[in-house]
Length: 353
Image 1 (cartoon, rainbow, N blue to C red):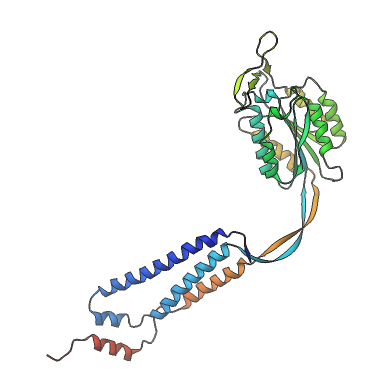
Image 2 (cartoon, one colour):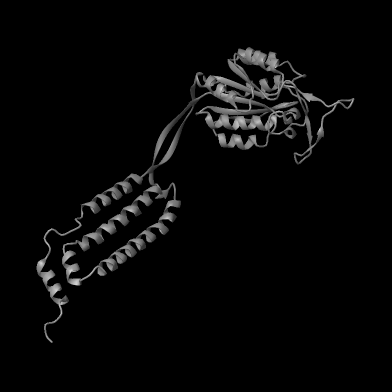
């Protein structure tokens, strides 16, 4: 026998004895209160019909029901059965820009941190879709292959920062091609690429790559981080602390500006939509509304062995114990009057003087 939640057994070890002690204390206190009411013979006469043994049985059944409920909460399991599990959903690749310009603070806390928060939120709201992550700046690589293990994907996402790619720059076109190679071509499910960047790319032609992806049946959605007015690009040390801002050869501060036009063109080429990141995150709601209606297909089918839950047995026994406790009468319908008479006689004072 195994337990899915053995911690409830530990709780029961403390709870059940405490409840038992409380019931014993309450019974004793009730008895002392009755003794203080008045004449002993009158009290005995009034309480003669009480089913004292039945009350003790009722308390025992209540305590047993509590123990059975706690035991069932621990979810006892024994035996196993094999199930075929089929997973259906989309193939979703996320291309995340980790270039130095994504550290700009025109979106709080930074463009990159905000994008990572949106990816985490996206994964929490996806239902059965496989997700992969491509990181890019001056180069691109697949960081997380397509997976439905969102917790592992999020663990890798935490390490996404400019230092993971030594080459500076932004190559959106290469990132699209890397994502395109990372989809599973054997699956019929709809392929979706979400590009999260500020849109600045002076090294590749992202529209050519977007057209290649579109020809392969990939829908491309883009989310732009930043503002068109621009923001300075921080320079950070090994501890992530800002030590200054990037300047050109003349010493002028370089501003990183959101390129709405490029990101809109990429989305249009990929038959998707472009969203600008907002403080409230409304773009993520709109994106999810879009992809929820897309085609799904079976992603994988596997045999899974599961332990058989047996908590129902103990819940049923607890239910029966509670019913039995309620069926016990509180009073005896025909009290044994002889026994009562003898007890009253013992309580009367002797007539001898």
